[in-house]
Length: 362
Image 1 (tube, helix red, strand yellow):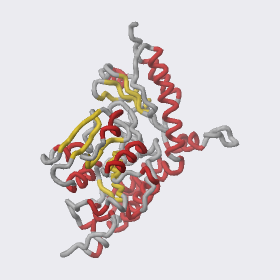
Image 2: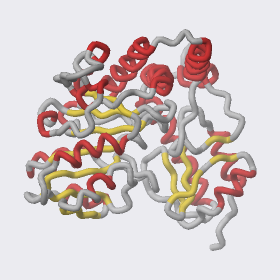
Image 3: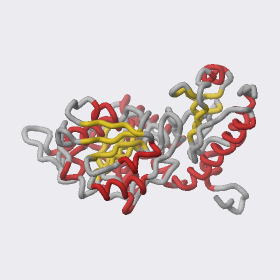
Image 4: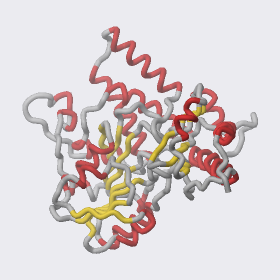
């Protein structure tokens, strides 16, 4: 990002204004940090609630703002985005809509936000293949490919364009989970858009847990069943609370009743992501991750090769507790040390981490 006349980038200015972590926080793959604007909105919301001034229909404003912001990030229309609380509940809609006997392809080691609903139906043929072979494994028998854009365990990144081309070629549908990528990696848009995109917003989108999104293309929308209709899925929820609920003609028919305060926060957090842009955030995050991988190799470690904001060091996950005691927050996943860089991190954070890691014997 080019510096402005003061010599600092817009990202630097935003970070200085919005974030003040008291630890070396390298764990956004588990939970993002809320910006100051989100904290302020949540405090105001709780204060109004406690004082008895809250008006439930008024929460539609932040829900709508968050929905529109995610739609813009996903290159979708507002009518193509449903809201909920978790990525897995959106994946369950896709799973319930597949014909019995359908073949579903996963990546080996895929995180379980998408898999359970598909695996536990019992009448689907589920097949896991290495991430690098996912596109080439699509064939005429494949009904659905379901995969995270960025892998939770080690940060490897799928190629949405390659997957979209493969599924189109064989008449299959594509479900992408953006929970570990939305916010630092631009979402696939235009011809590369997946049929179904699910995303939990509490990681890289910096929202409170309890806000999620489900973007569906117009072509794919008729293929889905409404499996858990609620009053909020009505065309006009506040006038159809009783008796019959006419479902919305848009993707809102898949809405789950929103967790109000999480969406108060999500509207603010997504406004920051849009302001800085995922492209600028991603360039910052990946540069820090590349610096970290280089330092790890100099220490004799072998980080997983990936152009990702997530760095994974196999076999040393037990170091996470030691690092936490030193004020460095990371996570242990699949036996490895998982390090996640986001917009509020700096080169100083990378160096602080590397200084605490032991060198491996040659």
